[in-house]
Length: 342
Image (cartoon, rainbow, N blue to C red; front, side):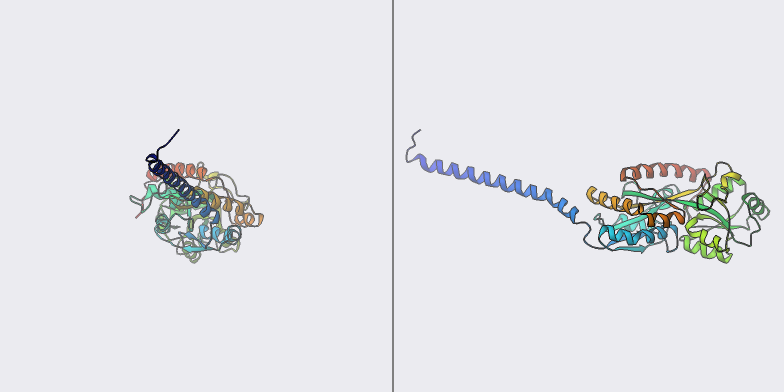
């Protein structure tokens, strides 16, 4: 093919335009590839600073106990310090709302429980967050075994004896809970309904203050977690009547279950880890694996089991399905016993 001198400039312009388009396309492709690679690099670097673990209850309760048992090993596995921050109030909702509103970067985590992640939905007319939509579910950490204890001033030594005592002192027996909407609240209300007893509810902001008043005799009975109560039972300051699980506890095999005297009764709580909604899947996976690894460590597992906390673990998807089923279950129970938050 022959080109005239007049055609050469046109060809040059065409080649130049084609080159510019090609360079522009290559530049766009490289930029897109860089953007796609950026999150992976960021995830690979996680964590590169301390992690805040929000416990939405005061020090001294079962949730706080779990956090402090796993804290050192978590710091080693993740390679960054894990800082526990107690943000109590409104049956765990103050701390949970704080986490729900935090950036979804993996540096603010919530160690929630059955109340803050499930029961509150059926107890409160309005919540500052939605446990299903506003949080990323990471892992179900432990099941919490409960025990029924009384102050030594109560003469009962068995569940039937306590039922008789409560009926003879209708309205005079005070029971404590870790707040409105907590499992001790619903569990004891269920106990009252099943036994026809009348007791006065005294809600606290967490398990620690509850134990303090139970030891002092300001309240007479509580159905709460073994981690809080059994050390005081072993020291003789409180008296255990029965465990609230369906089977006897391996840590207290001589204690009967409440269900042995009251068929169908059960009160077993649980805890779980969550983060703000929108947490990247890679970061979610890394945190999930870290918690599962720590809870499998014999030293950690033994400490948890000794306190009545049974490690569970699992995937984020399993935890999401579990939360959904628990919300449905406890909302129905709350309505059946007429339990609402003040």
